[in-house]
Image 1 (cartoon, helix red, strand yellow):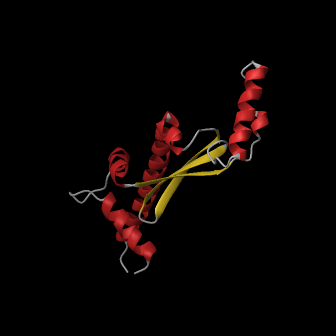
Image 2 (cartoon, rainbow, N blue to C red):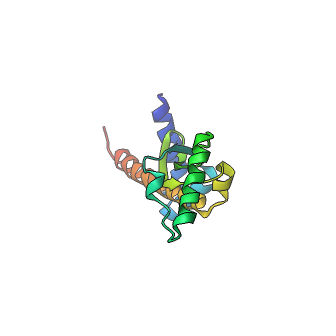
Image 3 (cartoon, rainbow, N blue to C red):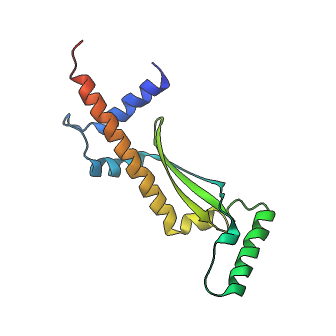
Length: 145
């Protein structure tokens, strides 16, 4: 059995209920919040720092942009990045992204409400994907060959 087939069976088993039915979206999301693996990483941000931060205080905005450039020069990957949060179960995964981020470090980002938002988005997307797969399995199980 291939890894993909094994993962599909694992995912389908997680999707089934003890009574032989199938989880609804709400219950599947609850399940995934405790069973899905969550991965966090940065990716390059392609939007320019100079095109952001317009608070109305030109001097403060300039200082902020300069501090970001300094952090970038010092190798801080969190200084200006896109953040990717991935939820996975077996080989199935879905990701959520947030661009134009500027943080001191990963710990600083994890404290921000955006981290929880991205986790929730990725988990909900994964749940929807598993539900779609479940529909395929249900349809296949009704076939006779």
